[in-house]
Image (cartoon, rainbow, N blue to C red; front, side):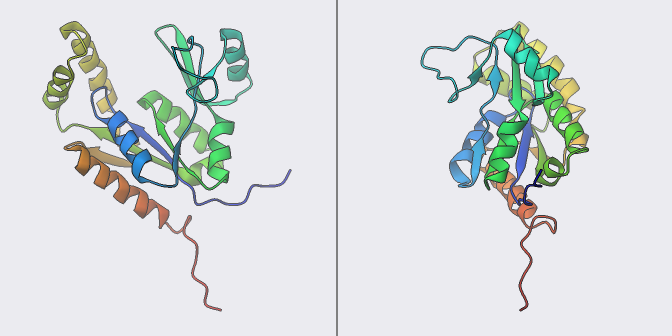
Length: 209
């Protein structure tokens, strides 16, 4: 089998506690980074009105999803509220090999799963950049969750409990962004991407001929 050519593309994983601002940051990165694209993930939940297979998600039934898990097709997968979600390795590698930067918005468990796979696969390891985004304190996170106005006090309490556990994982990421404004978060994230593109193992060397 022919070995794929080395790529300078980035696999950018962004994780944050609920209310940390990662969805907004990811949207802004997709708007401002011309080479960046999102990955279409897989799910066993039913399509919502207007959603299309292969555009919004790949929709599988439970048996199809399980077969892909057993075959090792997923970079990461999880079950949330009875529905399974996963990121296909082929989807990620296909985009990286085409010269696109790939953006994944996933939780800390998903990030850990991808980091573990990257330790054994040079192509993933070379591309992977992990960023943890969080407000500067739990009180600030609580303020944001309350301001959002979408959750009950009980749900917010549960989210903060999960956040405490997630925050302890920040040290396993390449970068930590303390979230302030949308503009500041975006500026810092783009600075990280620019620096990563100039790393020795990704940069195109100069020609002295």
